[in-house]
Image (tube, rainbow, N blue to C red; front, side, top):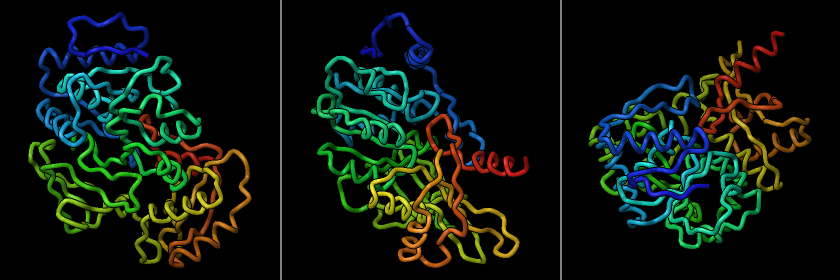
Amino acid sequence: MLVFNPLNANYPEPVNSYQEEVFDFCLQWKLGKKEFLFHTSGSTGKPKPIYLSRLAMIESANMTRDWLNLQEGDNILLCLPIEYIAGAMMLVRALVLKLNIVLVEPSQNPLESIKKPINIHLASFVTTQWSTILQSNANLFTLFSEVKGILIGGSELTSSVELLTKEIQLPIFQTYGMTETSSHIAFRLISSEDTIYQCLKSVEIKLNDQGCLCINSPSTLNQWIETNDVAELIHENQFSLLGRKDFVINSGGRKIHPELIEKSCQSFFAQHSIFFKIFAYGLHDDFYGQKLVLFIESKEEIYFKLQLVDYLKSNLESWEVPKQIIVLPEFLYTKSGKIDRPNTLTLYLNNLKT
C-alpha cells in the first residue's frame, strides 16, 4: 500500500511495475497530454482501441465530484489496472479534484494489502473483486466509515452477492458506463429494491431503432454515442438494462436475452446459498438455428441440475430454459475481470475435437 498526492512534484521510488505505470500516467497528465489510448474490456470479442481526450476525462471527473460531493483532500482507493478506463479515471479524479490516492496493486482482494488504518472516501472495484471481499468477511467499516461511494462496475452483481451487499449499511453503487463515456454515466443504489439506473446530471439518453441505449453526456463532449445495450426507458433520465444486442440468441425464431436466464439462475443459487460463475450462450443447432446452453464453472460435477431446470421452468418461458447444461472446470477471463465468453466457448469447442 502507498498513499500519495499525485500533484506532488516528486514521487517515491516505485517498488513494482504497477506503481511505475501509475506514476508515468500522472506525469503525462501533468505535462498536459491531450489524448490517451485505452482498450475496451474485450468481453464480447477482441478489445478495440479507443482514444479519449483530456477534456472528456475532466468532464467525467467533475460529474463524479458533483454526484458524490467529493472534496479536496479526500482519499480514494485505486486498485484497478489503469490500462482500462475504470482505473485510469480514478487517477484522473485525483489529479483534477486534488484527492489523495491509496494505491494498492490489483488483486482479487485488494483490501488485504491495506495494513494501516485510513479513511477511504471513494473506492471502485470490479464485480469479481467485490465478491471476493464479501466472502473474506472483511470489516468494511474500518476503512469505509466515511465513504461517499463504493462503486462496483464491469458487470452486474450476481443475486447472491447482491443480497449480501444489501445487508451492508454503506453507499454502494452498481455503475453503468464504458470506455466511450469515460467511465460511469449512471448508477443504481444496491440497497434499493429496484434495478433502475439513474443518470448523472446533464446526461441525456434515448433508444435507437433496435432498442439500444444512446447516450449524450459532457463526458462524450456532448456527442451522441450508440451502445449495444438493449434497454427500457423508465423516465427521461432513468433506464433498466435488458441485455446485450450482441449476446441475443435466436432460437427457433425466439429472441432470447441470456442475461435474463443468468439472473434467474443466480436467484436459484441465492436461495440455496451456493456460488457459481455462469453464462448462457447460443450454440449452433440444425433444427433451432441456435440452441440455448448454460455454462457453469466448477471443478467438480454439480448435483443440482434437475432442481435448477425445474426452477427455470417455473420462472421462465419454455423457450428460455436451457436445452443443455455444460460444466467447465474453468472459464477464461478478460484482463478487466469479465468472463471472456467467446474465447471460453472456442476453448470448449476445440476440446471437443481432440
